[in-house]
Image (cartoon, one colour):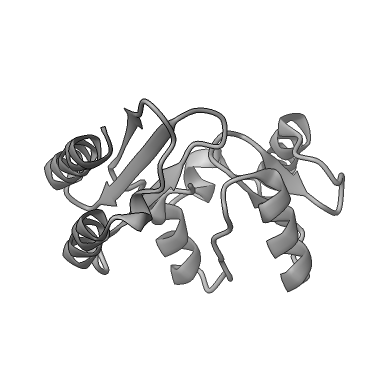
Length: 162
């Protein structure tokens, strides 16, 4: 769920980046598969494998402070070049859980939206793991487009899946 702005900033700094499924265990799997030590999610679950094997915000915060101290720079200086893209998350509550990817009409709508965003944003459609809900997340370099696409897709899902 990390903002695409982070991905673009890391790419510009020639730092490797990959996306994992949502959840610490999937982030851990990607870290181990790549031999990396740092990963996380915007929820604050940051894994610093050289310090701990679990997501720990205190450890992550202390690591940020240590870098600021070692480099003698403010956080605003260290995050220069990172511009968060507008992001819209819409939750679509259903009467019962259904997989939106089993409906060709929705798959076509998702593909069209992704093509619209290509190179400038991204789309993430996923089922909630805990309740009958579909999460629609859209990122775009255009805030209005982001909002419109997310709401249009959510409305389409609701119309098809109820």
